[in-house]
Each structure stands twice: as structure tokens, then as C-alpha cells.
Length: 480
Image (cartoon, rainbow, N blue to C red; front, side, top):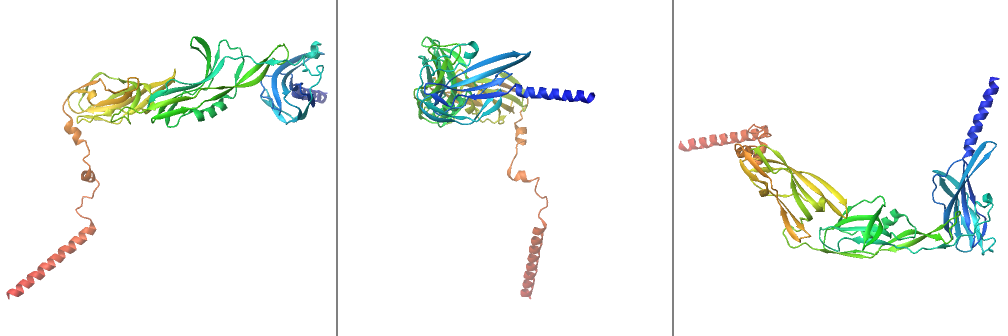
């Protein structure tokens, strides 16, 4: 008895497993082997007992044009058992007569790949009107006659693609903003969709990006709609690229005419509830070319070193009192609009009683609203050895070129330091390294000579003594 129950249970579990495997089967149906030039070929994918949540592109067929996609679903209740199916149909329109091969392909449904062996399709002459109609997948269910293939028309569009720059005349080091965007007016009725924007943009940037410039990219990752007004007319703008470029040398920057391809749908002249009411097509838009003139900076001894932009100086202290020899931190920042990354530290004017060290540097760059702005901070550690009032404007200066005013300007600190206490100048000097011979005192041997030189010295002394004895002996003999 127990054995019988166990066998029955195993059979029931197996049936459940088999039912689950086959309950969600996917079936791929291909259209007929032969069609007329005015007929439509289809690929139909049916998923049983589950919804079609996602699917990828259907394959391309040589000399066929995709016309649209329709979906359908059905549900049956038989003897208390419910089953359902969901279908998706891709329509293809032949463009000329001949024999064509639909190669084997995979299609992703709900993230899983399903295969079809493909087939050969023969396209013949146009058939008569009674047989040249698209098969309506719902005709049998509703008892209707097949629906004629819709006629598609192209709507006039009110859209354009633009390459725009905010300046066409700049100085060396002065930034100009460049953006690429697709525009549609509020009155536009033609349906559009972006076509492989990443691939197109990679090709475009090879032509658009100038040589010999510093680039600040705005890193647009999502194409989002923006409402803008141009000459009193409202448009929806879709930016695909934006950057600010800073030229390193004078001359001209040529930006060529750029093409941008969009999917533009043709719509059914007499739309129906069933079937495809729009047809995929393409339209290419073109921007105008641009030329940016880059002028050299006016004469100045530091024109090859200064930053270009609109800047201000910020500091973290105005007045402070310190003791001689006591170190303190001083933060000086250059903020404004320009190439923040290229900002160099302020020039230090050498003075005897103030000591500074190379600063720690921190920067923040903001890219938005068509410009690059930010701040670069220099944090100094300073010691002062002589009492008195120190004006930091006498020790630091930062020179730049302002392109809007077309002048060189100098930014200086406003901070004043009140230094109190005894002079530390001598102490500072004693703490300084004397260098040269003095640096070797601690590492040299304190013996007068090493053993090798001692041997040579002893030998020389002995020879001198011997020579003296001989000389003395010669003098004594001569006197006798």
C-alpha cells in the first residue's frame, strides 16, 4: 500500500514538472514559402502560459523592409483547466521579386534565447486583390474578413539638428561651449525615435573635437527633453553632447557639417485597431558648419603663463595676530569662470622675514548652463620671524587675462597679519642648513689620517731624518 502511494506521488510530481516545462513553451512560426510582391511576410512568436515582458529586435531579411509589430493574447478554459498564450508578430514587406534566404536566428523573449532554422522565401508577381491582403491574426476569433494592408504616408515634420557654439571669436585659453542637439517644435506631429545615438556620437566626435585644446566634457549619459524658446517659438530640445574647449594656440578651428539620423515613422492613412498603424523609416538631418577664430593674447611678459577667464580671489582670514616664529595656515582661493584645471599657484614675492612652503591644492569644477566654473584653493603654511604688521598683498600676487574686458589684471590678498614677540631672525638662521663642508662634519672620521696615509707620512719623516743625518755628516767631514 505504501509502495503504491509513493509511486503515485512520484508520477504526480513528474507530471507537474512536465506540465511546467511545456506550459511555458515558445513557438516560432514563419510565414509562407511563396508570397506576392504586394503581400506581407510574418514572423510570429507565441509564448504559452506567460506574458511577453521583453523581446529584442527581430532579424533582418534581405530585400524586405520591416513594417511594424503587433501583439495578441488569448485565454482558454477547458474542463476547469485554464491556459493562455501571448503572441508578437513582426511584419515584413518585400521590395522586389526574387528568392531570398532568411538565415537561422535567435530571438530573446523575456531574457531567454529561442532559435529558428530560418527558410527560403520566394517573392513573385503581385497577386490579385482578393489574395493580396495581410492575414489578420484576430479574423478567425471575431469572425471578420481579412483586413487590407494599410497605406502609409509621411507626415511633414517641424524638427532640426543643430551644432551650436556660444562664441565664434575667442582668445587663446578662453573657453567656447559646443553642443549637439535635436529640436522638435511643440506643433510637430511626425513621430520620431533616436537611432543608435551612442554609435552615431562616437563617429561624430571624431570630426567635431578640435586638436590642441583642453576639453571639459559635460558627460551627457541620458538624452532628456528640455523646453526652450527660440525667436518666440517653443521647442523641445534633446542634447546629445556638450563640452567646453580651451584652445592652446591661435588660428582657426574648423568644425564641419554634421549628419544625424533619426527613425521617423510613416503612419497609416486609415489606421485600424488591429494591425500595424505605423511603419519605420529613416530621416537624416544636417547641421551647419562652424568656424571659431582664436586670437593671440595681447603682449605681456607672462602671456604664455597666465590663466584666461573671469576670476576673483577668496581668502579664509582678513586679520590675525600671531607670535614670531609661530606657524599658521593661510587659505587662498581663485574662483570664477574659466579653465579651473589650468590655474597655477600665485606668485610669491621673496621677503627675508616670512617663510612659506609649497601649498596643498584642492579644486572643484562645475559644468552646467553652458559654462565651466569652480574654485582652486591653495593652502599655505606660513611663519614670520620679525614683529610688525605684515600685509600679504606684498608677498602674493596672481596675474590673469580677462577676455570680457580684454585686459590683464592682478589679484592680491587683503589679509593683514599682526606679528608680536621677540625677533626670531637669528634663530631662523641657526636652524638653516649651512651646506657644503658643514654637512659632512657629522659623517667624516674624526681621526687626522687613516692608516694608509699614516704609513706614507712615517716613511717621509724617516727619509727626511736620514737626509739630515747625511747632511750633518758631510758638514763635519769638511770642517776636519
